[in-house]
Length: 290
Image (cartoon, rainbow, N blue to C red; front, side, top):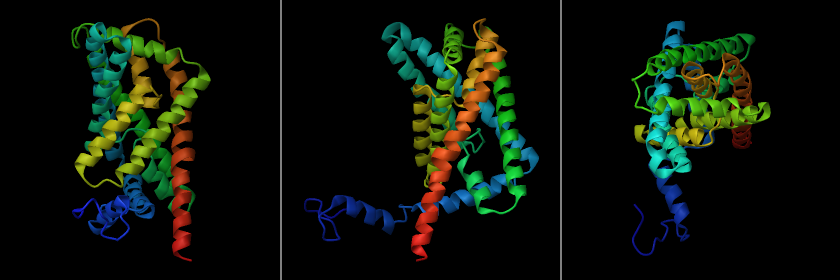
């Protein structure tokens, strides 16, 4: 607790920010980048060592749960647009989508790139080609099972009468918007999504409390949908809804988006987030070791 008397710092500087840092240190709430990175490495090693059945099930569950966010976006937008207009309806839809990312994070399932940071950090810290093979296998299994689980739920929600009237049309409109973006825009939106979700992966290792993890996941989910940015699984499932519910989107659009958004996700997650944090931590460790 800060002392009384105008916010005077107990360190004698009068700087409130220093007081906050000090309190964080005293209570173990301030975590330095090397400590966050070490936590990520440990979690990454665990994920790389997961049995195949666990990889399959965590990937499948994540695909199922993220569809609830997609459907929440459609229902909220459809309900809001008649009274509030398209712009506010998009904002409300993005707010609704955030619950899907919360479900994934709190449920400890695995969405492609959402738990990107740890396994890559673990692979960087180990020697040998086998660890990179295991990393590639993890990514491949998770990506395929994300789509498998998501497709099951998309098929269920595509049945007429399952969702409120108008939600199907909203899903088709979102899918059409995604499919009409140019190749470069799809790639750059993929870079943004990969960077954003890998940032979430990093930040979650700094958050111990469930409440903090929920807030982080919700904020990232909201921003992802507000863009909207192209996460390979989320956008791919949006497009799958467009194929099944309308005639303006094709399976070729789905494949095109998977290739470009997936490449962007990898570029953003690896180059802009994981490797830069790795360089940050290596620099800090060298400084500590003299």
